[in-house]
Length: 190
Image (tube, rainbow, N blue to C red):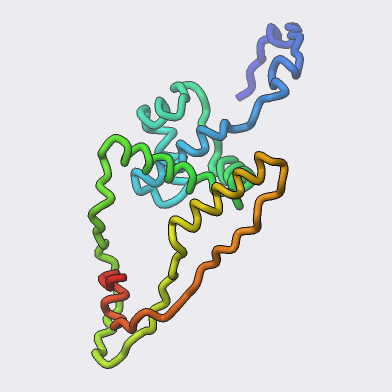
């Protein structure tokens, strides 16, 4: 069934500047949004990027967290994937973010670093009582020696001289033999 379309839209002219539509400093996806998307994916246990994008499209709380309103389109999952790889591949950004969060949690007393918990990951039993592993332990130099060298180097720099090369080297020596079961569980003392 054919019908005649109205010609009203054909005769309208609109002056458009590309600079107005896409500013020079405009990025496809804000890097903060990319980080927040990964955070949503990790915190809520979403397994793939495609599913993450679907969840963000339908969940108002996720949209609010990302700064998108109800009418703004969420980036396609391939756009998200390409941007993620191009911007963050080979960087330690996520490690730095995790370290910062951990520092804040410790600072506010939310984490107690004195207690160590081991998760329930399956560890293969290695219970042969006669089998021992040689453990290497780093023997560190004295704290006084380090402080003295640091003070000497500060004095040399203050007088326009080069600092002395660092003489402290890590020395490895065999301390004791430990049963592998204690080593795997992290229970050996040193």
